[in-house]
Image (cartoon, rainbow, N blue to C red):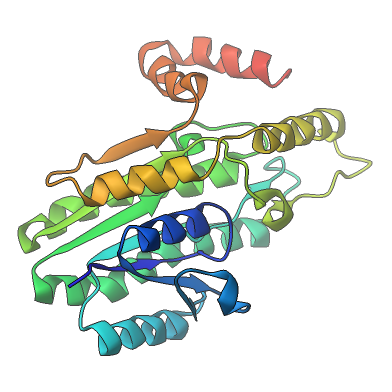
Length: 267
């Protein structure tokens, strides 16, 4: 039987690329979207799931189990971007980002794990971010939500290892997707102390996405992971400088690395 894969946030961008690629490789793929439509444009079945609503997570997982009797792979990809200075960004928007990127991912994991334990097998791939390895100016909430998911993955991986389940992180850098249109942007307030720096950095962030890599690279990496007997804990997919920045943060004194970032972001 083909392996059954659940990919959250699969209606566009990286999630769609992963779901499409795995479907073409012969996997039985169920992608999710908050509002599925235009099913004919997808090579996989798109079902409703909103990571902020636990009842929709349970309904989607129950639907797959009823049809397939198993879920072999979960790709936890659903997430949102958020930009803005810590002082100017509404706290409620910060909570929404954590509820989506962190607690939403955890709720999907918690719903799938009982089925994977029962079948004594499973692979969970959490899409995090290279930004989750460092606090980036005007992306502090996004960075911290993804960094938190990286650490929870490490902890959960040890807890479920004896059940035959592997949990891994895949951290992408900048990819050419439509994340800009779905990202929460704190407004550029006229009276903000951060107005000029924030506007310049917002333009820089958008340019990085526009010139980012093809999402198919993430799809290929996920395919490689789920076909690896003993996958690593952390994977990074991005440009040389993006991945090298993680190495620099690890080896340089904190203030040196901070200066590099501030020069890059012209702060």
